[in-house]
Each structure stands twice: as C-alpha cells, then as structure tokens.
Length: 291
Image (cartoon, rainbow, N blue to C red; front, side, top):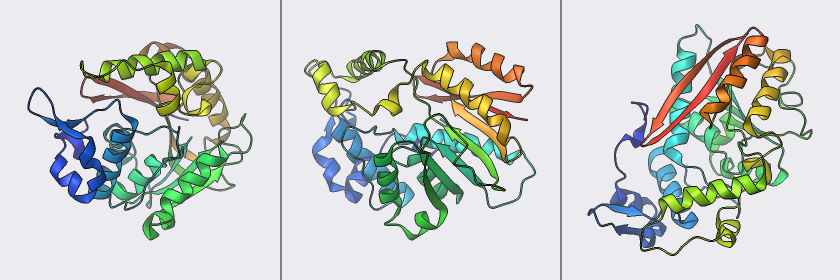
C-alpha cells in the first residue's frame, strides 16, 4: 500500500473492538494464530469498516442500505493518498476541491478525502437512494457537512454536465466505475471473489446468498459495455470541462482495458499517466489525464 496509508500494518482487532463492540462476534483466531474476520461475510466487513472509520477517521456514525456495496477501507484510502501525490506536483491554490463520480451510498471517498487531507469534496450519483444515504452518512458530523456536498445526477447519459456548476473548479475528479458488462458477469465475478475468501470449513456460497448479501445495485456493478465504454464516454465528455478540472482520474479494474483507454486519450491529445497501486496480492491502478 501507499506508505502513508494507515492500514499498511495488520489490523489491531482489540483496539477496533474497543471502539465498536459489535465487531467482536465476527472475530476469530485462524489456523495461523492470527485474529481476523470472515471477509466473505457482508456483516463482518460492515462492522470492520465501522470500526476503522470510527478509530482512524473520527466518523462516529456510518451505515449503508441493504444490498449496496460495502467498500474495503484500506484500498479506498490508497486511491486518496495517490491522488494527493498526483496533485501535489502541481502549483495549485488551496483549499483542494475534488469530485467523486458515482459516490455511492457509502460516500467513502469524500469522507476519506476530508478526514485525511481536509479536502472539500463533491459526490455525485444517479441513484436517488444512494444520494440520500450518502447525505445521511455526512449529516451527523459538522466537519463532513461543511466540506462535503452530495449532488444528484438526474440524467444517466451525463457524467459532468448537471454536476459541475458554471465557473466551478475541481483540482481532480475520481471514479470507481461499474466494471462488468452484465448482471450475469457481475454475479460470476462476485462468486469467484467470495469463494476465494472462504475458509475451507465454510459452507459453499450459493448464487442466492450473493443476491441476499452481496448483490450491489446495477449502476454500482455493471453497465452496457462495461468499464471500457464507461471510461471512454467519460473521456469524451471531459473535453467540455477541460478548463474546470486539473486532473481527471478513474480506476481501471482490468489491465487489458488500458489499451483502448489510451487510444481514446491519445485521440483527444491529452497528457495522461497510469498510477499503479498494490494492496496485498491485489494489483490495481488508476488513469489520470489532463488537457
């Protein structure tokens, strides 16, 4: 992980349980003598996130509606830290202002950006329930309310139009796009991920259990054309806002999609770079471009 990421070390579950006792029933000592949780359990991950947010980021109340995605905090924090490195190379005025496209019900990127670096953040989403949930997650905190604004994107075809206001400037945009082509592909991907997380003594996870516990909303998991088409659309639409954004960025989950994304970026004569990130055995990346 990024050297500034607080989660570079193993979780101290005793400290996390102290701030959130509801985590305790989900912890156990594995065969290697390590205290941990079952990461294929949605409730266990939810309680872990609540503990991490409360202990490290001073977020007292945080929740997500049933069937919405529960993000892994360490990986989300990595994106924030690498964004800080990216914009720190620029001669820019403060305070820093960022836009999270597809903020989700969890509102995690704006929360981390504000709590780690005191950034001003705007989060946008096409899902009305996600917008309401994101607002509910920031309302209990005076600091979060002061630094974070949630906006509803009412036109699914638009990414920036209707969100960026006239004469408004963002130092960066960020996005975790839907990366599957279809519901079927998303379900298969989730099955594979969860079965890799399962302990050998656990029961086999069924498709029904995924629907109940790990479904996610359609706009969170898949869209026509998957992440490649979504990102290419974002790149095309970013041209109209080239004077209102310092760096446009987006996560790219599949390395094999980079070639098509680079082709679109080169076609529009952008300056672009790819920032690699690693969390344990997982390798990820985000692409950044500017005009």
